[in-house]
Every structure is written in C-alpha cells, then in structure tokens.
Length: 127
Image (tube, one colour):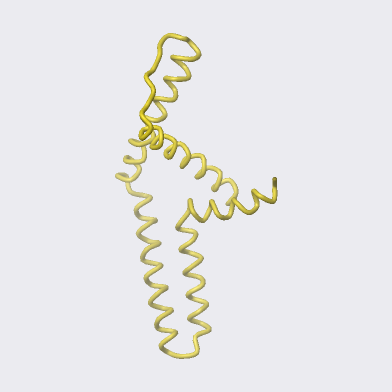
C-alpha cells in the first residue's frame, strides 16, 4: 500500500501544483543551456527558460489575485453549504429532505470537493 502511495503522490503533486512542474522545467532548460555545444542551442534554451519563467510568473500572480480567490470561493461555498445542509439539517436533526442534485451538478460538486482534498494532500506531502 505504501509503495502505491509513493508512486501516486509525486504524480498528484505535479498535477495539482503546476508551478512546481514549471520550476523543474526551468531548471532543466538552464542545465541544457549550460551544456549546450553551439550558440544556437544555448539561445534556444535561454528563450525556452524565459518563456517558462513568464508562465510561472503569470501563475503566481494569478493565484494571488483577489478575483481568482473570489471565484474559487464562489464555486466552493454552494458545495459546502449543500453538504452541511444535508448532514446537519436532514440527517442529524431529521427536519427536512433535500432534493437530489442532477448528475451534472454532482460531477461539479465532486470535482470541487476532490480538488480541495487533493490540494491538501499534495501540500502535506510536499512539506
């Protein structure tokens, strides 16, 4: 079981954290530039490095954007509210019955919830 997790966790962290993946690619292109034998190879590697650094900078700026955080909250809040209503109001207090969601809404909800669990898992294993 642990060996399977050892194989899955690096994959999940690279999927969940694209900034880390791009940073690794930047390192690879810098190494390629240092080992380049011709000026053309060196220039191509440096251009690729600049492009990757630009993509990384955009991702970092986007993650810090208040608009991005607001949109993430707007996707997560209804899902959290629905689950809390189901558990607390319908199951614990037995005071109501909530209509079931359509299949498409369930897919969206599971994607949102799955993202938060995978993000938390990836961050724990990165430390």
